[in-house]
Amino acid sequence: MASVLVIAIVLLSLFPDHLNIARTAARRFAVDMFSILPAVMLLMGLFSVWVSRETVIKYLGKSAGIKGMALALFFGALPTGPLYIALPLAAGLLSKGARVFNIVIFLTAWACIKIPQEMVELQFLGARFMLVRLSLTILAAILMGWIIEHIYYMAKEKADTNLIGGKNESF
Amino acid sequence: MSNTAILINVIAILCLVFSLIRDRQKTRQAVRAAISAFLRILPQALLIIVLISLLMGFISPVIISRLLGQQSGLVGIGIAAVMGSILHIPSIISFPLAASLLKQGAAVTTIATFITTLTMIGMVTLPLEIKELGMRLALLRNGISFLAALLIGLFMGWLV
Image 1 (cartoon, one colour):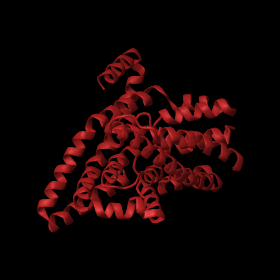
Image 2 (cartoon, one colour):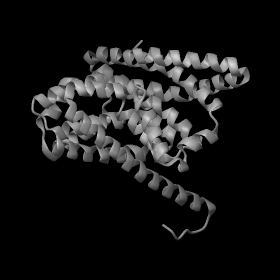
Image 3 (cartoon, helix red, strand yellow):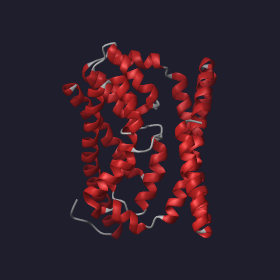
Image 4 (spheres, chains in turn purple, yellow):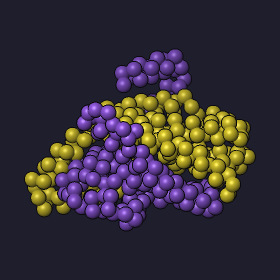
């Protein structure tokens, strides 16, 4: 982190004409971020206290199946906020037992399929572009979720077996 | 404050009030958890702000248009994908930008890849993602999103 700051200071002092844009951008972004962040943190805190592990597992865990997928998709597409807001939410869900597959769908949906954003896309890029991209993205999200979950749990097993000690034959 | 921000804050406050009414103790716990989560995220958030201000300061839309509009074919897709991953533009800005690029003749594939990587992958937010989701999941998601974006771009080129 410190190194990034140093680089930033160096760059900005070398190119002072960029300083203003950078500063304005920083301020705008900081305002945007901090106007949402506390509220989201609060919601997360409430969530972690009120929503039990069982509930999360029931709706988003391994056994939830297609219903879980649909839920993840729905909740991902609903809000409009930058992706980094969703990250703590996803982390919270994961820690309560949601399966990786659904989390990937959730995050992907949040990133790409925000409903208001789709409206903007519709307006500027046309219905065809938007619908094709939307369906492709959903498809990709499902595929990605499946692949990522597979690799994730495979790697996890490998790591766990290594921890238990001794050689493991499977990989 | 944007509309979204207002909405989220209102919802948060409403939920807080409900929670207070139902159970004081739990609410106190929740608030404490919220504060600790906030503090946990803070360094990364600040880092992101610095990175983004650098990006915004040095890479203007003009440069982006020039880079994306001219190249086509595989090189173009590659550039679009990399740029989309690194950049962090709000969609309100990126969509009109994409539209104007299309009008100027950029390939659909390139633009679609750009938009997809732009939204799905964030080099800038990567540190936060690693911290929240763990290195494995963060890298997996971004890496495979990258591939997916390329594929989506290719398909878009055929279908649109």
